[in-house]
Picture 1: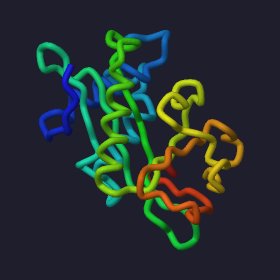
Picture 2: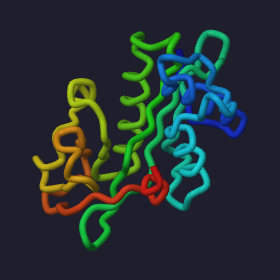
Picture 3: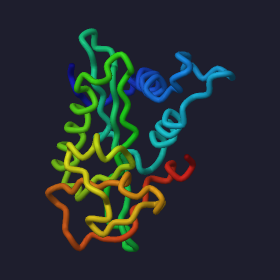
Picture 4: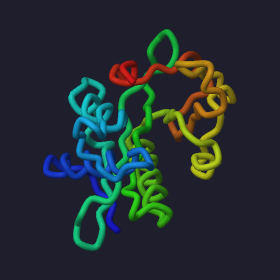
Length: 182
């Protein structure tokens, strides 16, 4: 497996991996035909890619032995507080079902966190499983005085601070605009 930045030629493969990863378990067709809708995460990714908050340097793919895309992760621009301090929102994270539980997602998360830290970002926020993301240092956002876009998310809205983080960074987290449509 190799983790690298996505290229333009990866976009269709990323859509396919994301669709497969988030497909309903009762169907294996993720083509978006009328009887099998495209997962919302795939549509979100398409909208993020054309938004002003897209950060190409923070979009990574995992490739397999035949250089095929088997996973993808992205961080997009987010903000914290009324002064709109810069932050990142992670997601979606997608691993093709045939490659899940093999460390692909873990490698992708480590890669994007390392890159975000190297770029001087302060923190990464996400909505996800505390059991899964806790292993990467994510903690409930309220531990840092950061509130979720939806209070009902509770401990599922998490933050991972990076080297540039300052404890004075507090307030409501705002995702990139396309997240408001899902």
